[in-house]
Length: 212
Image (tube, rainbow, N blue to C red; front, side, top):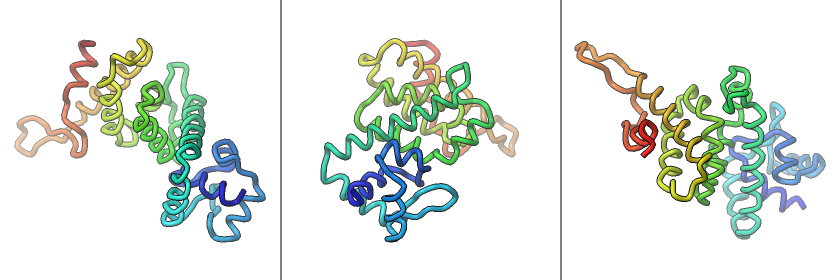
């Protein structure tokens, strides 16, 4: 049981709270404590986490079984998508300052869940996550990640439901529009320059504006 839990906990990036460990890794407090006592797991500030070298080793052990790895990844994604959903406003996305702060501690897990969904081409998951989290991505300076995910989804638009297409267009369009107006004036006074790190405005902007 310890070995199974050790492997499963490697799915968390930046650690996790007890409820996440229970839901995603089917953990119990006694086994978690045993791993802590063996220095395979740390527990601080109400979060369980691994040193990165240990997490990488546990991840290698998890990857030995593709079935086990896929099952853990699906539970991880489902948990964090539900967490984001629970913090969404009536508008369908996370905008309240308190909710954004509460999700900040799980930023790395949310990112990992979206990346895993993108890797397995779970377009519905990525579209839903974008619809919920685009304000969080924008406020945390990670608009470029959201734009990349939106482009990935829209590249396969023929396989999207109308709802997922609309959600992705709205989220990607908002990220592009709001990121585009963030400028740093040039000393010469001849226009502006986009903040470094943001991608150029490209095909998604035209898709979001025209729907074609």
